Amino acid sequence: MKKFLSVLLVAFLCAGAWSCMKNDDEQVDNTNAMDAEFMQKATAGNKAEIAAGAVAVNRAMMDSVKFFGRMMVDDHSMSQGILDSIAATLSVNLPAGPDSMHMMQLQQLSMLEGHVFDSVYLSMQANDHQAAIDLYNREAAQGAHYGLRQYAEKQLPELHKHYDMLIRLSHVR
Image (cartoon, rainbow, N blue to C red; front, side):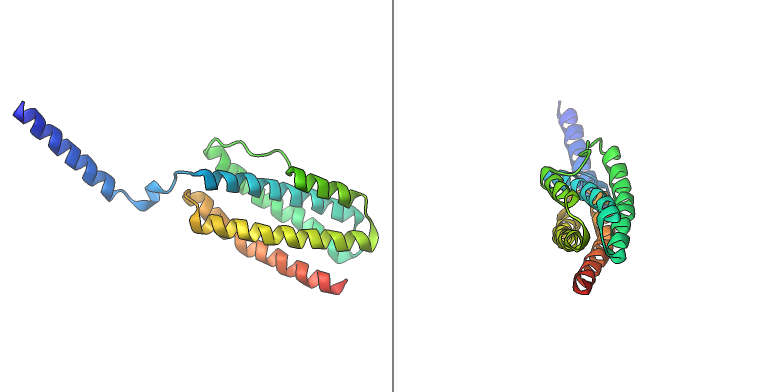
């Protein structure tokens, strides 16, 4: 019995020491509620940017706004493809489209045209990109899953580029 307890004690000590020595990268692949919320919000945002960009290509008056709309479709489609891959490895189901707030904005945009469309679209995009920058900054700094943190960090420069372009376009109108 004494030998059994000694072996059991050594096993527990070894297991404890091994878990303490695990590489941090091995421990960061867990997800938490913040990661799940990030994936949902980032997907809804990407899908909204893609849909609104497609509307801008057809309804904008200024060529620069049409160009920006096409860029939103391309860049956010690429970003969403990466996020889809991460979500698939985690067996997470993502939204099929934009959230209800963005759906209302898309409906509003589809009724506008010309300079009014350009103005409303650019304003909506600036607000959405500022919210996205905040969301991605939070995930990059506090996310539990290493892959999601890396994704957020890599997307931030692109989001900042979009936001800066929006500010410049807003002053051109």
